[in-house]
Image (cartoon, rainbow, N blue to C red; front, side, top):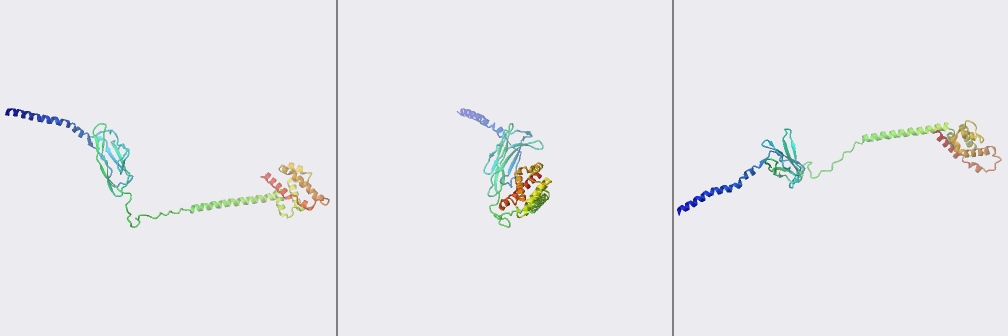
Length: 308
């Protein structure tokens, strides 16, 4: 019986190592699985002094045991947490020709007081070779402004409105003054030229001179007023003009032809006044009503248009 027990015990003891070996077989692939991830060579951003809007860049060397590796997929842009947002990743090449994976994070919130946060841990798969493991990296971020002002000197909660410096208007004023003086000089020169031209025309042009003299005569129906207009017509023709020689004047001075009916009427009225005044039964009021000044002004205007 003892022999049977001994045989059974021997069989059991012989079976135990074999079972243990078989149980360990499934764990053998764990060794390559553990070796499938390797620590990456990383250039970390500084850990302090960051505020809202700052960009923190991690640079991962794309090499393993001196051989370049290619990442399977780049980390995607995404919101990480309350404080960080990952921006699109990129691959850079430095001056030595080494390739780096740049992973950027931007601070998107500001704490009320100094706070510690962490850039997240990452595992970056590669096309061939082990994955690159990036551990979490702690950094501190600060508030944009202290919760309370210091209340010392110029460090107050509110600052007074900043006074706006007055613009330097002296050059503008000087330029405006010179411009106004130049404009005034031009206007004065133009007025002087206009007065000189009118004075010269009043002396040289027959009808302009007659109009100037006629304005000085109080009674436009006086014989002197009629003589003034006769002298102007004679000067314009260069000879004595009467009713019969009026066509010759109009032929020599075509600009007076539109006034031919009024000139013919003028000479008829002049003949009646100076040669048949005693036999004419027309009253004095009718004689005084002859439009001598309007005729002289019309002749002056026609002469001016012709001259200019």
